[in-house]
Amino acid sequence: MSVLNEVRQESPSQLQQLTQLVSAYIEVTKPKILVMLVFTSLCAAIVAEKGIPTISTMFFMLLSASLSAGGSAAINMWYDRDIDRIMERTAKRPIPTGMIEPQSVLRFGIILGILSIVIAFAFVNPLTAFLNAAGYLYYAVAYTMWLKRRTPLNIVIGGGAGAFPILIGWASVTGSLNVTALLMFMVVFLWTPPHSWALALYKNDEYTKAGIPMMPVVKGARSTKFQSLLYMLLLFACSVTLFVSGHFNYIYLTFAVLFNSALLYCTWKMWKESDDQFIWAKRTFVCSLFYILGMFSAMVAGIL
Image (cartoon, rainbow, N blue to C red):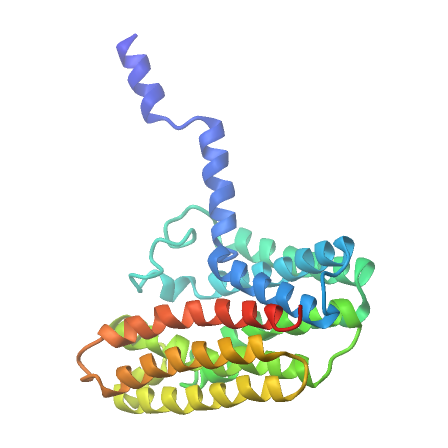
């Protein structure tokens, strides 16, 4: 009996195996990033509506946006499986650890992408369906397969992929786009380089080992920090311009100045820091996460 009990303890049950498999499939959608993308999409819809959109619009918009972002993330993990095995930060992802076969992840990503377009077209509007498709292809093909391994501008150009959910949220309510939607898009677009380069600075050895031409790998820490400052200044200007566009009140402006000042300070301290020290690079990365949550919350507060 004791031997039988030991076998039962060592062998995971079918339920445990199923739970682990489901967890692995969730992981290939990059759920932490997905939550942030969905959050910005929801905020954009609320700003466009100048209130809370209908339940059905919100549900199908968020569902389609989630499927698009999750599907493209799965394609990213399938394509990057070779370098994920090399980098410590990504070595425990489902494909490198053997939890899921690469072809299964590829099929999963394609299915999610198709579903996102079909759902948006059937239950939201054609423009939202088009933007879901464009955002999916931007991240899965343009960034992952073309830019990431070819140019240090991978993050700069690829930053638009993370901003597409904003356009999706806006279009789901209005069926169109305007200057305010594009400026909100630009907030995420301009935020991406200082956010991603802060991470790349203190993970530089991993990117070098994997052969990914991130800006610190190609141009060095000093140039990367200076460029981060420039993008941060552009981001500050874009955030203020968003207020000037007339869509937001002074609540937004107050918090926009506060959040931009905080991130600018961190980026400046990162620039001043010695290139072999990464305390402020890490702080800038963390601050940038709070920045994007704070800014989009401020946009919502600024129209209610």
